[in-house]
Image 1 (cartoon, one colour):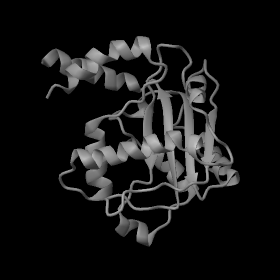
Image 2: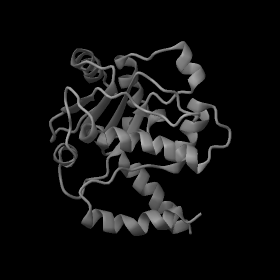
Image 3: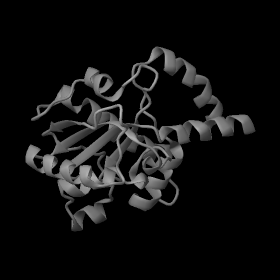
Image 4: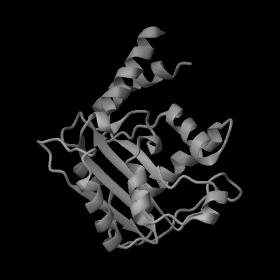
Length: 218
C-alpha cells in the first residue's frame, strides 16, 4: 500500500547520492511470473529470485571469466549521459519454466529480441513510446561474439528501437562464459545462455509520472 510513498521519498536521495539506480517494479515482476512461469499467485520469493538473476548477471564479470568482461564503473560511464539521468531499467531473458526449457533451447538472437519486448521488462513502461540513450547487454553462458554481433545488427535495423539524436546509438556488450545458475527445485529453468539488458530510456518518465500520481492519490 505504501509503495508510492517509499519510492517517491527515496527518489530524492537516489538522485543526489547514487551514481546508477536500477529500476524494478513489483507489478511487472508479478506479470512475468504469471505469464512466463505459470505461477498463479507469485510470492516475494518468486519476485526476489527474478531480481537475483539480474544482480547475478551484473556482477558475473567480477566473479567469472569471459570474452568481454564489464566492470561496475562501466555501467555509469556507458549508461549515464548526465548525472541526474541515472535510472536505467532492466530486462532479463529467458524467463521460462523447466517444462518449456525441456522442449526448446533459445538462441542468442531469440533472447536478444526478447529483452526488447515490453512484456519482459522489470518495469511497467513501453520503450516504444520513448527513445533509448544507451544500452548494456550482459550475456552469460554459451554465447560467442559473432552471434551477439549478428543479433545486435538485426536489432539496429528495427524501426521500433530508436535512439536520441544527441547520444551515440551504441551498445555496450558483456560476455561471460559462466551460465546462469538457479535455485534447485525453484520455478526458473536452468538454461544454457541468458542476457540482461540494462537500458537508459526516456520512457522511464512513464514510471515516474505513475509513481507521482499514486503518491498524490494517497
